[in-house]
Length: 510
Image (cartoon, rainbow, N blue to C red; front, side, top):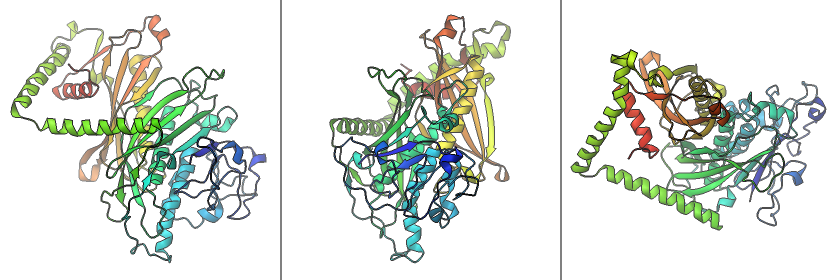
């Protein structure tokens, strides 16, 4: 079954003055969710606008749980109705009894809010059982029999009505009338997490639900600019599962404003990997199996399976013989020496240094923040999408300051979430232009590294929680006007090693 969310505006007071009469009502909201297996949620009154015909005749929707009502502006209060400033944000009967730990989504984008509202119903089941239900939380058992699910059972899509929703459009608009990529990253992470939860759900109230956390983000590639004045759709499904891991592919599509159906509507692709944890022990837990049905699903399954095997084979090869290790060390030393040669000129003979080059340390930017409760996810940790959002905006600023013109985002390379970030942590983001690729004069590439450090001043301790790598380019018109991109050179061996590691990961080293 395909699930779709539709984003529409409720900021107008005329549209907002609707009364939520009971928990069984079906209010219109800017983001409506159709019922889907694993997450019982409400359906918008205008069902025809969100119904999907992807798989033929749909079965009757399951009984609805408490309706979800979301607004696309920040001023809505919890459960406000008529006479309270004009906005019912979330069904009052549901939110009034929900513990604060399940409210974090209300501080994020309207799409993330709705996704987390839907996802939280599974975790409410666990808490309801622990508060006098038929099975107490202590008696709930782990899932013992794995199910076999199809990608269609977890497939979810979201439609942003940018063409008609002025308020929603304003929330996602950047200064150049394109979509804010950082904000979109939050929604992509929230969507992937919801898909993972749906796949892991067994719909059995006697078993405790699994916790899913973002393990990594594979290469996320922007294929064309995303406009903010035309409707946008993001959709995703599970493509591959391991023992406790779930791979999810998401596609962002946008038809050109002139309605040209000949052009490829895919604007961005992203692959997420989530891992499942037992909600009581915190240990890794097995997840439901996957049975692809269509040819496309089978192809994606085969590709991800082959990539998983190749990754394991490389790990085994790295444990290879001494001779291979010595050869690799010699080759690496030679490449390090080449990289450091120009840096030594900057240090020892600055007047003779190449004016078309710049030291890596001179491209650095940094910002810091104390992580707030409003930035947490459903598990009480800082939302991975929030981290990607902040990292992207710093990377964009770094590329902007380096190029001297507005950069164009191209891709996010593989991101590993190494350590969780908690509320109250002192988080520092440090960025630099790691290297540039100037071989193609029509599309020079600027590779920006952002490292997130969790710093604990009381313990005099700092740890890396995430490392992000973003790639930008510049508009062709700017290059025609004489804009030149400088070469970045390292001044220390540590900087040179970081550059080599990244270039090897990109397959740029011979």
